[in-house]
Length: 115
Image 1: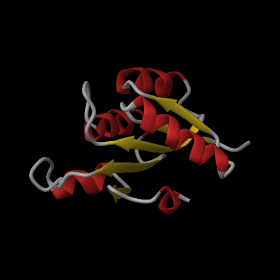
Image 2: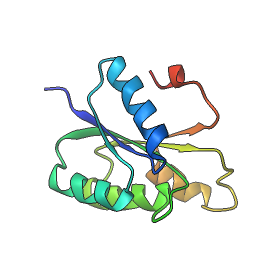
Image 3: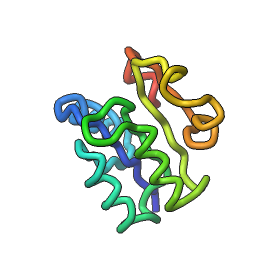
Image 4: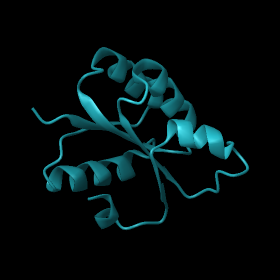
């Protein structure tokens, strides 16, 4: 059974576009625009996901905070990708990012870079 990608993006329209693109390249995606709801879903379906793709800047919880909570639940057992248009140097220590995030994708980028 193919595991799913958990996509967390608080811009609903952008989330829809990401979702359509990822499904279009035959990936199973579960999409949330609310990080708290995504975290609850992850807790209830911890074995469903192999990748988390999260935006950094979100209203209620940023992507680093979200990733930190996922790591508390599953440790290094999941691949974590952070999308951001911001320099993280001023926000989070590099050593913390390395322990939480597997890959950072800087925006703007082409959706083709995700496959």
